Amino acid sequence: MQRLLVALLAAVDAAIAAAVGLTVLLAPLTLLWTFAFGAAADWGALWPATGVLWQFGHAVPLDILLPDDMRVAVGIPQEAAAFTLSVTPMAFLLFTLLFAARSGRRAARSGAWAAGVLAGTLAFGAIAAGVVLSSHIAGVTTSPVLGILLPTAVYLAGAAGGAVVEAWREGDDGLVDRVHDLLDDHGDHGAVVAETARGTAVVVVALTAAGALSVALMVLLRGSEVVTLFEAARVDALGATVITLGQLAYLPTIVVWAVSWLAGPGFAVGVGTAVSPAGTQLGVLPGIPMLGLIPENGSIWMLIVVLVPVAAGAVAGWMVRSRLVWEQTAVNWRPRAVIALGIAALSASVAALAGWAASGSLGPGRLAEAGPHPGLFALAIGVEVLVGAGILLLSPRNRDELAEERTDRWTAQMGMSPVEVDAPIAAPHAAGAVPGDDDETAPIEGSDFFRDRHGDSGDSGRR
Image (cartoon, rainbow, N blue to C red; front, top):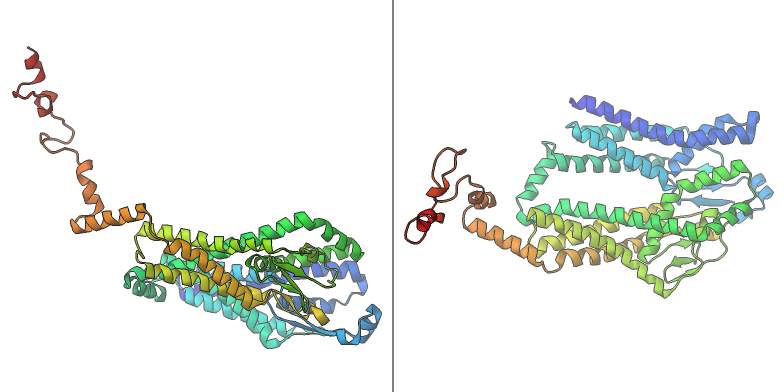
């Protein structure tokens, strides 16, 4: 397929990704405008509100300044009229990331992944620039530079990641294949890159599943608190729908908070607060229903949950080790140690990025600090995953592995392959058989097996 056609299709993919993300915001906002404001609605503010929220969903902070009339009507003090919102509703970010990865994989299958990734990223960046330039709301300010760079960076990361993984797996007759061949020339170290990436993917999936399971468990245990906060808000059906949709957008963010809690550092919901397995210190919280899921207390015995990231690292180490044994690569401990360190480092990097996107400011005053600390979160994940992966990758090899290695060494010394070793067993004639056509067999009387010690057959002896 021609590079130009691949680039055009990738640009269309990027336009679709941006359009879907904007439509997901525009549709409920249109209903809100219709039912809440009716014919007197300011429809000119609908698109700017959509564009600002789309930027916010891609980790762009919002600087909010409440008008004096609104501040007086609601009863907000002057010092709380200006604040920043920077805790990202990560559902939009994840959608863009996954859609971009799909586009990158398609470009790699077409044989021109670099052109596809570049065209898709430029198209998405152009759309982001258009959204920034056309989205201005009184009292809400975003950084134009971040409004363009952050959504574009998210799309670039997804597209490049998907394209490189697919090209590494299937080949691209280009840069990725040259790097692949260069690594293969280093013997046991050739499998380090691929197995490190595979192990990191296992850790990320396992921790995401554990965090989602923890959130589901808290919904079962503390669902009544969430319902109570909903009732205390005293909103109508439209307001309850808006709150529910907003909390669904924040669901991936809550999962990141849960993973940080499982790792040990926990998270904050205000200045001077801490929610961790060792204990919970909370002040007065805003009446957001999803905050009712936060446990009211902790215990030193609950620190056993830090074994969850250790177990995720152990699962990754077991899967990587099984593959190394199957492919008979990285037999020595050095490449396995590098793989274990790589899995821990990449997992910590992913945790740092997720912690950065899931933390920040939730409002004025003491709510200026919320979410996990990215550095502590990354450090905890890195150490715990390293322990789990290191145990499985660096433990002494079992008898099956050693027996397989001795068999391979003996086969190499004898100068034959395993297929050649097994060849006499599968031969159509055993040694000493009468040569002839493959479909014929020798008569049973002619076999030496039925002759006695004197050279006579069994029948003649009996006569």
